[in-house]
Length: 223
Image 1 (cartoon, rainbow, N blue to C red):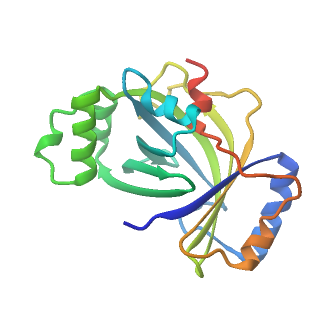
Image 2: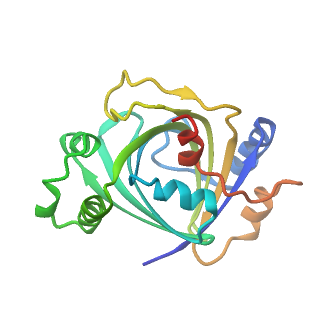
């Protein structure tokens, strides 16, 4: 299990313009980006007591959450992701889903999962049976990703965060999302064992401090 360091900063649009130029000078765009960016749609799950949401808001140090993720509206690649957080460290595993499987999970049908061999799918099934995980909210946003091989560094600029409010029909292109109030830009920096100085200097902004921003929590405020 390879934990990665994860730091987030809430930044302004002006900050993002500055950082974009800096990052382009020292890092490469992610190979999956189209014209330097891609769109992300995530469907988040929580139990009847909103455990994942409450733990985030309460600042619980050890957390786990599940989501389904789709890139650029391409249903040929859909991931069921398990995200585990331990303080400032994060670890993510995922399983590939077919569109039919993703739709089934969004609809609350998990009865096909016990016959699967993937640990992420089996873990999701166990949590669903024991805690009653349900689809809660769709989160849409735009991401500009940059990579740097030494340290396995990944820097992303996320913006245009939108929420589906009550709609959880993940694969329905007509499921309307709306911008969240005062939607911020989020700088996120991830690395393995060390963060090279050239990247540390590039992402440095005066007066900006790491924040515990959660797109999931921000979008759940509209329930």
